[in-house]
Image (tube, rainbow, N blue to C red):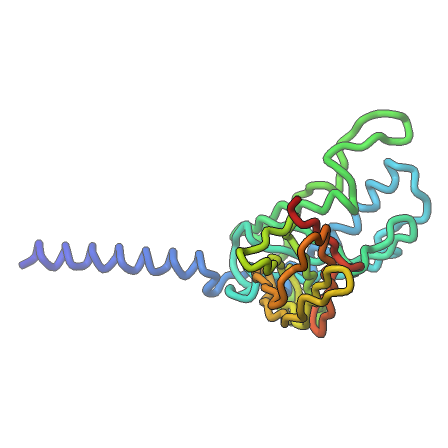
Length: 260
């Protein structure tokens, strides 16, 4: 009987330990939160960006002049914004006249966040450059803003920052593949942001409208848009124009070639 009780206690201990690990992995009462990252990242980013500006000889760039803000998200709409993980994405906006923001108004920084409040950040090369750069002395040096490490106070302010940015809709299809009835479809992705992507896309083959179909895609999800009207014979390309009520669409219509 005593052996049975000891075995039962041991089994319960294992169950509780596994349950605790699952809670920790899924966020639970983790001190890793959206609000704390949204307060930490802009401050750290401003300092490493200023360091880069000094290496490049850019004048007038200070942490204060950048006015950075961030909106962070973990795993898109399907996951709570809490807990460690490599699937944190933060949209960061800043003000630098020599490096204007893209039409959506931000760059996306990918974070790998640990349970101790420290994280590694990878910034978008199209806005901050690659891993190395050439400084004013002609030396090839590490780009301090391309990738950087930081930590936040796990007991810091956890109230909402109120920062929101729209998701960016992208048409990811690069070449059209019409079906047996000459209908075409495109794949779209909705990036990190607030509210997902909603609106419509109109397709046109020359003067022929192939249809207008609705967009209803959550952030960090994909969707396929199929157009009801067949593409006329001899069409060389199809133009897709997005009109969004939530989110930001491509800055100009997307033109895709038809197969020869």
